Length: 240
Image 1 (cartoon, rainbow, N blue to C red):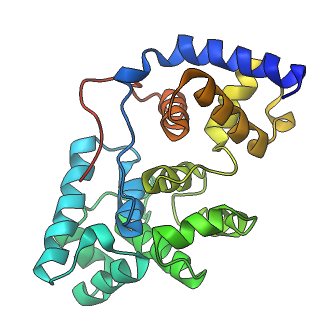
Image 2 (image 1 turned 90 degrees about the horizontal axis):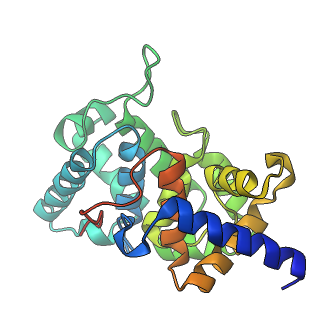
């Protein structure tokens, strides 16, 4: 590690200690290490919602799949898409499993259930049917194609929910989320356009290694800070 990078890591360590507080008190990301279906559902429904609302949707999906003799915690996007086919429409899925929240406040915006179906369909179309296949894709430049496709889903253009899919799956991003890049650029007093997302991901891993923290939890804490969610709390957000 060069001296220039050392200075950056030192600055980031200091900033994270100041801004993120005690790591033991961080709200940890929920985790679905074997269910890409639940990662999709949770990530899309989490924006603008209370955790309890999302947990209820996840539980309704689990109950529905259990009633079919399936296991939601092993489902991929193909199994998720099948539930839409069985219920007949995104609206029916929203009424029985999800809710009627739209993807945005724009009049006529599609339901989040439609975004869930679209996101799952895109992943299947790109040959990603499980967390393991997503993990392998994340290790190559092919992840950029997946990221781009996901951001074409209604209401997901910012990329925030895609970053959350990776977190929920327990996959460190090869490239840091835009909000994490913005945080790092601010700490280092650099223009955002001059900060490489792939480098930021490596720097966050170095910060975590320096502090003995989990790198995914560190990025999640920064993400929560940047989205103005509480970083610390008495309830650990881990589903399952």
